[in-house]
Picture 1 (tube, rainbow, N blue to C red):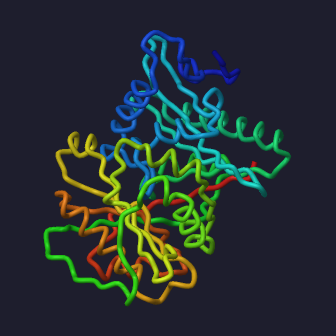
Picture 2: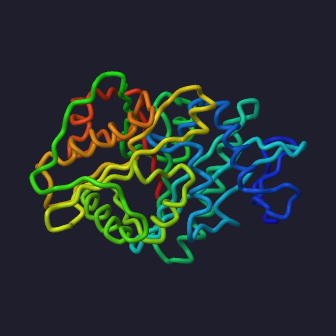
Picture 3: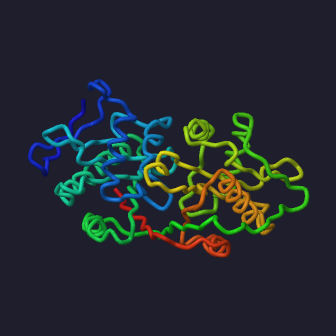
Length: 335
């Protein structure tokens, strides 16, 4: 078991890696405990504009994650989870970026433990950067009304770099009609046989977006194994020459809906490939995704958007009834 040498801020508290050798230790139980902790502070379980606490286990189990070093738990003297920090570190060729998700039990000395988590994450990112001999950035996001955490981040030399929105729309009203351009067809992704074409579609659709990072075939294969994945919500628009031109991915977390007693879904991804823009595909795919969600009982749909996007995506969403419900700030620190 790995133990950090940072001095604990809470008497009897320890911070350590997750150990699979402990009695009853499973990733499912661990992330259920993390979800319970997060929801004490944020009942919706949202960690940023479109990431839920229920996504953390999927991140942890993804290919190439260093499970021994990219997750730390803060445990009190009774063995109770009182805080956690989790890093998501994508594979990049030109620099190292770490995305930090963290939270602390509301009864604890939050500011002190959060500072320890930041210290651990910076230490870990320095190690990764040194191994790769690349520059390092550490990023984290939080809702703009979390004033104390914003103050802590800024005290630790983090700076704001971007603003994001969570938007929502009711599906109670009849959906507008839509039509694909002549010769284009709409269908669901067909699993393994479509993965490579979908990866190319995704990467070419977002290549000119802020902080774009390519996805890989391996990461998409892992994503398709998500228990909440529904093929009927993964839509692609196919051009007359059989090129994948646009896509929309819907998502429903049944467990979260059961806990919240709501029936909500998400538009997780929406994109149009270069060379196929200005044809109305974005609007058509969004409406197609909303239609699919409504068909399986979703009453309210959410999505996350870069509020400073040059594509003016926010304007499209507002035209179809979406309204902002939360504002999120992206903070960054060069390590």
